[in-house]
Image (cartoon, rainbow, N blue to C red):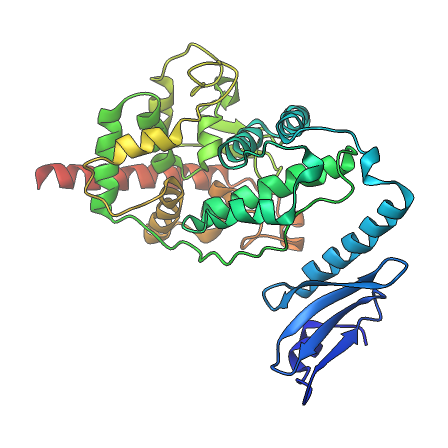
Length: 375
């Protein structure tokens, strides 16, 4: 049979022993069902048709299992054709530095910084890259389970690096374990009182972190889009993000409100980057962890993330009656109410509508700030 998720779910446990169902679409790949009902993906590989267990279903998805099966079959072919000893002896640290250097040429700066942070913080292997095992990687990732988002991002970073090593000939096969993550979508929205508290703390906190938080509140943009902001992207009361910088690779123009533009114009003008790193003018600010920990000390607000400010902005836009397609254009969401064929034919920029929404939002924010100061 050609295995599908529906077929796998319907497979019944044998009365005794185990039974394996092989996939017609990928010879040697199948799912083994035990007497107790456990379903395990397996693959046959090599000249002597050795069998390897890949992982249990549904923890390991069908598509992931197929990918691992193909990797296993390619791996044994490479081993038979070219011995592992022929690979160059490269330490993990050197491979990591080469990977990051290559990323700087072809990847957005904020993505490179995130890779650098994750790889340098969590992965410290004092061995050659060829000596790494799946267990080594899994052990590091498992230690991060208390922080689900950080865990998933760290896994993606090391997986990307090891796949890069395969392409550069440092590895025959990336020792990436078949790990899956179930992260619950965040729903946190700050109340008016909480938003006022964060705004007031930001006013007192000072440059650069304070204004960064205020711009996140005022514009609803992503954290990376705010800290990467350049003066050369400002024109006629608008922020013009180039396509190569934005997450979805689509040029993004937002006609922000007067308070946001006044805040931007009040900031130091020492470099094109409005929020440069302390050490390099051509790299954006990246000291979020320490600054937020200091910022939140004594702040009577339930735990929140900076991305929660973006969700709060969107919710307040809905509360003020802003049409959803205007809010989505402000947030630069690709998959929204205007997508697919409609997005191809609807080329209206909604500049006036977005500017009106920003002005209305700033008036709302000003209102709750005044109400809080009187109480």
